[in-house]
Structures are given as C-alpha cells and as structure tokens.
Length: 366
Image (cartoon, rainbow, N blue to C red; front, side, top):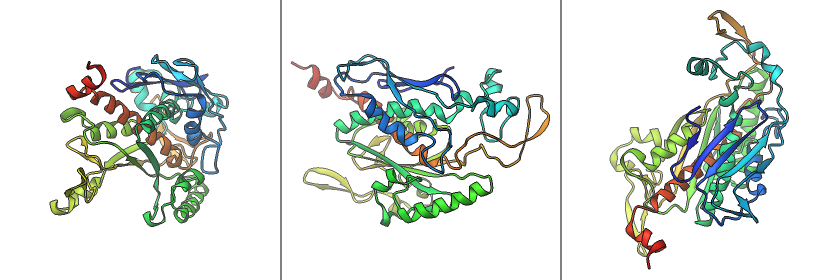
C-alpha cells in the first residue's frame, strides 16, 4: 500500500490495522544522541488513548509503547526507530453485520474501489487507530524541537456550536479536561452539548487549533514545498480533517489589504511584526512569529442512528452501526494534529540545513 510514509529527511512510516495484532511506526532520520525512552512516547499516546473519558470510545486499550530498535543505553543511535503498540481489546464481531455494506462517511467504498479487498474490522488501515504511529513519531519530533527551543501546543477550539473564549484561556485545562478545551466554561457547555448528541445517537465535529512558538525565520521551501503547504498537507492527511487554515485562514478572503498585511518593525536588531494575520508564514517560509493553524474535524461517522446505504451488490440497505465509537473525535485528535505539526516542522528544519553554505561550514568547515 503506497502512501504510508511521509517526510524527506525525518521520515515516518506507519503500519498496522485497527483489529490486527499490533500497530506501529518506523522513524528514520532521527539524529543520534537524543535521550529517548518509552515514557517519552507514552505521555503522548495517553492523550489519544481510548476509554479515558465519557466522551471517548469505551474500547479500553492500554496503548503501551514498545521501542524495538534504534535505542542503545537510552540514546538514539541514528538507526531506524521502530515503535509498536499491541491491540488488546479488539472486538471484530461488532463488524460482522456490516462486512458487505458501505458505511456512510467511511472509506469502505473507496477502499473497495481501489484495492478490490478491504479489512472491514473497524476500518482496518483507514481506522483512527492508525494515528497511534503518528503520535509516537510526533513525540520524538517534539522532543527534538524542544531541544531547539520550539514548543508545539494544540487544543480544542470548538465542539459543535461551542467555542472557547481566548480571555479565559487556561493552558493546564487542555490536559485536565475531557474536551481538551483551555476554557473551563466552554468545556462545561461542550460536555452538555455532547450529552444531547449521545442521547440522539448522533455525533459532533469541531476545530483543533495548534500554535508553534520559537520557530526561527527562514524555514520552508518556496514554490512547491512551502511550509504552510507542507503543514496543511500533513494535517489534511489525518482521516477526520476536512479543512485546514493558516493564520486568519478563510477570514483573509473577506479582509482588505490594509487589514490583512502584517506591519514589520525592528527591536534591538530583531525583525518583528505588529500583527500575525499570516500565521507566521510568508511566501511559504517562516517569518519568526508564532505559527498558528486550525484543523476542522468532521463529526464521527460511526453513529447508532439508522442510516441508508448500499451493500457490495449495489442493493439498498439500512444500517445502524454497532460497536464502541467516539461521540466526538476532536479531543483525541488534538495530540494527532500536534504530532503532525511537529513531524512536518522538524523535517523542514532538517532540510533547511542545506540552504546556506554557512550551515555546511558550521558543521564541516575546518
């Protein structure tokens, strides 16, 4: 299956299916000498782990990371890092009744159209559990970025009609709340809204915001490999994402130039901007301001409400999807978006090392 690898120098390949024995990732290009252990990765995996809250699927997986290669005496060696997570709570029988039906909102039909065969147990490769590998790789990328003074932070901006108020932003609430909202009041209202959705056997979508601080100016390649294009592509590769915005995003199309342009000024020899409508990227290259993006997440397509579809023979059928599913995927997607941003930025920074002769001389010059 093509398409399971991303990156140029820091490459990430995910593998495994939702109801197979295990899932995982192979990370190649990680520099040697990084202190790394399972606990570094587990912290990130726990944030997307199912079964933690009342608004997450009750499929209770421990999602314990096992590092199989690339580490010696607690340090990365420069060789590929393989991380595995075993499936321990799969219930494949939940999918027997819909094995030959195309679930609305899922990739069942398109996988059949492409491959002529598909793993119908939980969606197989198209399942959200595939993101385990992304998150594990993101944990490694984020640790390297932290060594460079760069922090990647994602959070829930909205669920359904409920949005956070930036004036009530409390960073600690991202990790303490079931919704991953940094606004306690919005968190309470979102939980009430989700209770209504669950009562109606329905689901909700929302928006994940991601801010990257400490990024120096000059990262990203112009024309076809712009940093914003790379970030958008990486985030859009997450199965539940339907749109990505950088900076003001779609609001920029309704603005005039005098409103949308970010004025530059210099302070103690440092180039700064008075506003950040561009979201930290100009011409596909980072400008030194915070990088800000938003991912729009669709409602969970697996719902218990009766839906109309067809089976593999083209016959009309009605289905009600059984099994254990999230009424909203947004809170668990937060760390996935964070991981994809970290992976993409680190790869772009590693590629950027060859953009100037002075960079090569700093490493290899005599």
